[in-house]
Image (cartoon, rainbow, N blue to C red; front, side, top):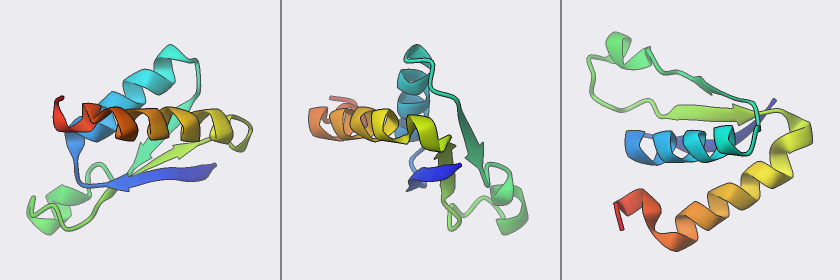
Length: 74
């Protein structure tokens, strides 16, 4: 597994996950429950991991999302 994204933005994370799922690229989110330990301060970002064989396709999807401004609700 390789780290594709590290973020505190749940909207961006959700959007990228949905796009990866639509392209049948397996992904897993790490550190989701760390906010419980830190008091929900959002100091520990979540990590989105994908398999190495799908990483280049996943990276392209992330770049497309960032370029379109979708993560900002545009």
